Picture 1: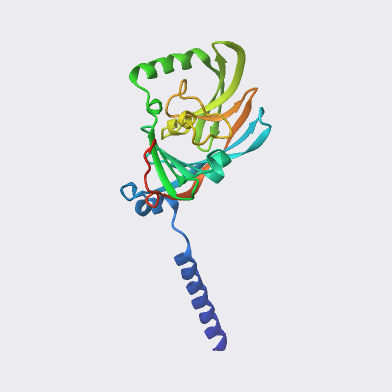
Picture 2: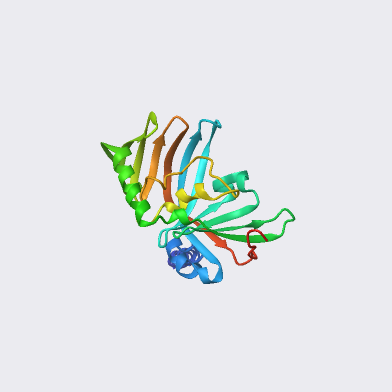
Length: 245
């Protein structure tokens, strides 16, 4: 009889413990987005992140750069400690949108919180620019025939040549379900922050063409992961400051 009671108590404790663990388990990032993504309230929840390994040969620096992504809208977020380091030390994070809008949130030299909003028109090219971009891609990016899978996406290897140079770079490109120009457009923002390795490809790559690997004389770059890595960016606590005020 005692053995039966002990077995029963063990089962009760096991089930209770399991229920507690389930109750404490965090919600999946995608489910969290349904309640946390509230742009109208200055709240942006990024469920995934692109993590690149890089080597900047000219600066002799190596490391990782992380770009947080909302796959639904293609909105991206760059954090100071993960993305641009001391180049943008006044800004905690920078949010980048598909239409070329960038929101910089940080503090001024006196420590007062501030938010700056800028529109970079080149991030959303006009029809003529898109046509030229496509022509340049077909001219200067020649597929080698090599293919592979990168985190569920098919990547294709290309040889990139330049109009005014004999140099050629090997690189890999994949097609993503969201636009990449907010990342490539980061090169176009002035006097704010810069990534440790160049992603200046709006002139030649399409909006959904993500660079997954590159080896050039100046830099080495490789996509290390694309996976859930949630980050909540809240802009409402940063008063907007007009540029030039």
